[in-house]
Structure formats: C-alpha cells, structure tokens
Length: 107
Length: 120
View 1: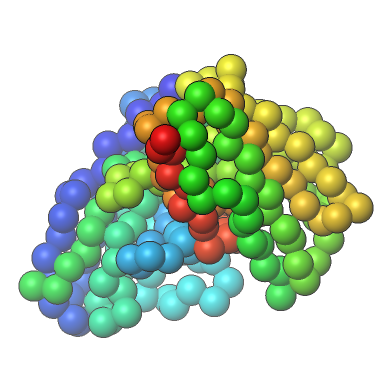
View 2: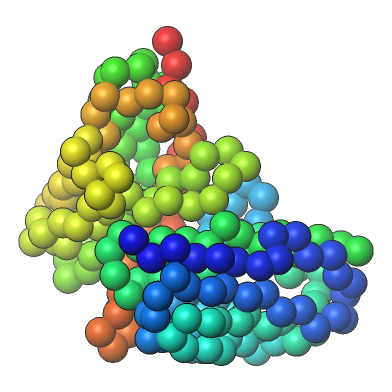
C-alpha cells in the first residue's frame, strides 16, 4: 500500500492569497497523481490528473507539479469559491489511496 | 452530459449486506471502468474498487473478502455489494467513472453520493 502524507491539514488564507498544498508519497509513483476539490455536502470534483494536467473547465489559477514522491497543488489567487477541502490521490498502484485532506478556510 | 446517480437502502442492519446501484445517464457505460469510493462522516476518502464493463474487477484488499461488484450494460448500471457490515461501514458511498490518460486511470466524474448507515 502506498501511504500519502498531505500537509497542512488546515490552511487559513484570505481571498487573493497564493496557497500551496503538499502531498508526499511513501514510494515513487511517477506522475500518477490526481487532485480533487470537495465542498461540504458535495462529491469531490477532479481538478488535476497526471500530476499537472488541468481537468477541462478548471480555472487556470489551479496548478499542479511534482513527480516521484513529492507533489504540490497551488492556487495562485484564492477566490471565495475555492474555500473547500482538497485531496490528493495516487493511481500508480492498487489499492488507490487518498491523502488525508487539506481544508482551506477563510482567515 | 454524463451523470451518475447512486441508489439503495439508506439503513442496513449489522451483519447484513449493503447493496447499492449506480445508474449512468447521458452516455454509455460501455468501454469504461467504474468505481466505488466511500467517505465516513468528517473523514477522508477510501477507494473500494473498480469494475470494467467486461466484468473485470480490482478491489481494495482491506475490503476484498466482503466486496462484490457487477455491471449490467443493458440497464447502464453497475452495483456494489458489501457483506457482513458493521458500524464502521457507515459512510457516504460514491460511484464514479474512471477516466484514462496515458497508462493511468483515475476517478474523473462522481455521483452525488448516498449515505448508508449501519444500525439495528
């Protein structure tokens, strides 16, 4: 099983801030990583796959980087609709696993 | 556009079998993998498994002994059965389509989720 350490678990930020979320793997996964956004009471939505490829329709202020064991999700200019919980997910090997989540809250 | 909708009992007794169905609308179920993922209240996401339209499956080893997935292409549906449930199986259950890019595949479209509570 590939374990994932996502940090921070809670991030307080203001509209307009640049925020960064980290996801570290227990072993290398090449670029087989996805990022999801989840709002309260809603299903997760895919933001990024293959570590850095933006899903169609996702605003360009979201970006992903990294390969191997260390990955980052960056929101370049936080908008009000971006306050949510974010999860990374590896699909390099079964079982697919998710990070613990990062809640982005209003500062 | 493609939409997924979970359905099934919201309350299951301990030791019984949880059964859920996901109906795919707006597109064909064929030639895709489909997945189930769950989320206990206030907690993270746990991948349960995936099924191809041929019936080929991959399950999470932590649940493998209790999980059965199936697909009915004539109804554009796929299903989850989880046996011998306990309170630890109480969660929101999501069905999801699995997209592909290169040699990788990942959940790219999710249903709204359905809460299943295990209680007597």
